Length: 388
Ligand SMILES: *Cc1c(COP(=O)(O)O)cnc(C)c1O
Image (cartoon, rainbow, N blue to C red; front, side, top):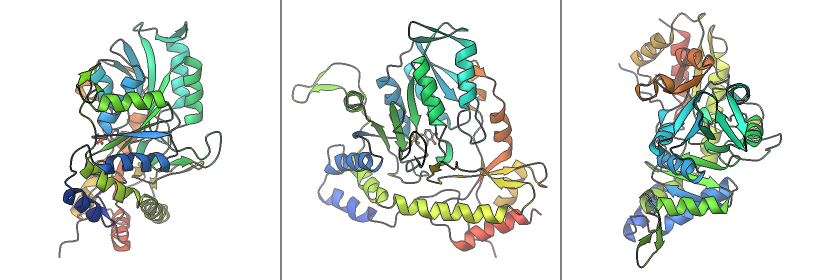
């Protein structure tokens, strides 16, 4: 008998999704004008405690706008991580700016010490601008990704940004719900610490609108700019005058209907993900050569994605683990290829990429959906215990 298929990460739509979607259809508000869009923006802003939010079509478009409202132009450079999903970095190129790739630390997020070292040793700070010594270009911003629901070291990163007059864009597409439980940013949510943050509601994220995203900030001016740019930069509603090049990036009422229903369940999803993470962790710690990468102690993580680190002591390497799980009908995957190794970025500048190289070779993501059963979890653990 073939075993039940266990996917890596799938949506959980057992709340009020159908009710709200039905309402949207019955009232015939299916496009960007419906009431759910504004309501979803307000609810997200309230949840992460910021003064406002602007919806968009997906996380990628949100990041495009975030960089633009931070003033990044084609003349500029942006410091970005190399270990993450490529959608975090492509928007830098949409604008025509250049990325400079940074290494990760053991939390898989950007290494803040290397970031500082790069600014000190490879750049000059002249009349309030950080200039890259190699290219003579102005580094205007740093883009941080809170990988898998962990939190990058925002205390260090914000102090570096302060020192060198850098804007901070937080790619919080994977980390909605993660917040600090202690320290300078206690009770601050990921995405709300830098100048602008972006969430994603893609199908594989912790909550989903099919496709969708949200820009958040506490700066009203930036918020207004974001709204303007995502809605075709219309400066007059009646006469259709446009004062700059805008985009058709606004979320639809149908997406927002899903989003509202999903947001109501976010805390319960986080609880389930935390339980499942702890179950895996306890059961995997006895397996020689395997361990789960930790979420930091000073945060409440959203526990979105689980990263299994496989050392040489385990009889199978990364690819063999993926194959072994797959032959047992369990989906897993390597974490991404480094972005600085991808064809469009081969000539981009990198700074001492070391740990990221190790982690891409030695980490496997294992099933993390909120609808996993105890049996599914046991199944995954059993497979890892019997590598034959
Ligand atoms: C999912 C994701 C994005 C893009 O979000 P979409 O909604 O799929 O466009 C960007 N960055 C990271 C790190 C992501 O995981």
